Image 1 (spheres, rainbow, N blue to C red):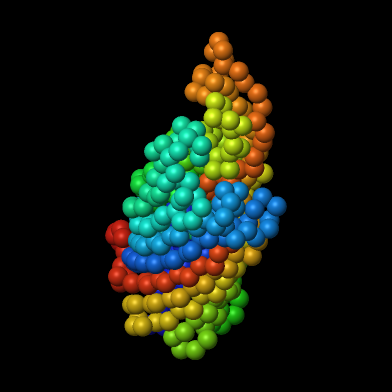
Image 2: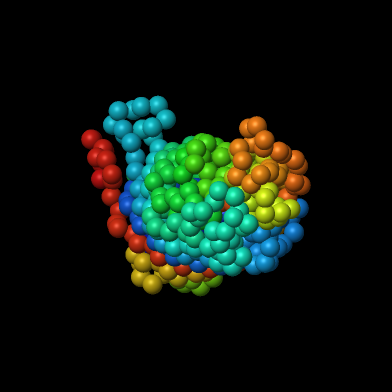
Length: 403
């Protein structure tokens, strides 16, 4: 019973908000093989998202500092993950597959989010002097989030599981696909869905270094497809830069049913690409009523993104099958995506650039905050989690195997 309890504890996920933007706390237990069975992990997360790191790594008291004033993107999310652990083709003697354990997971999300503050005022203001050709902006796109599928195999540490062999060291190779099935509002600065596929490969290791404790560490690379409808007038990236992710955690049993985990995560993102932004909240004002200003068409890049966070998890067994957890995440440092956007002016107002009688001139440059995955939030997060063990048993029968 103690072994089953330890396995259930290790499978608990510190589930974070949103659409899996690599800001999650590490999901403890991904890198350790367990007896075949089905587990469910549920999580509730709340994040004020009212502060960010700017491109230089300085903390800013706003989610969109270049818009002026105070902006926040408060978010609450509910996440559910079904995780299976199972053998494959044991009786066929297939190389690699037959003599080890595998894992498969599917994650569902519901996200409640909105825009508050200065940027919400910009969304609500439809006057021509506030923006150009941006009359139908919305405040949010809450609802069902993206779905993520994962499949992995243990390269080491899972052989001899039927005989009850225990390994102090294990290595897991895990692949993930994010399906952009969530609600996506192209006219809002925040949405529940990402409108972008991603493909990720992860290599993780588990080491039971002492009695009652363990160390886990992992590294991953994530590649994103193009977003053909970048939200909020193209201020969300058309192409999100590839991410490299690191995580390390140390867990220790404190007393009989109480466990403490300290963890650190880091994400390093390459530059994001923006194509033909349509407006900016901090656009320069036109010199007179007979002149319009508009962003110069083109492809723009920011300096990339980064986020490092650390935190603590406190987990308690309510019963042998039920585990509750409280998790605290503190962003330590990071960088958000920002880029310089040049503006041009045209007169008379409403004329088509390049047409006869339409006069054009430079109107100055502004520093613009990239939206969506370009933001690196510096606000602390609280998470609640619950895990349920459906019981143990083989997902596939093994002909001729002794029970």
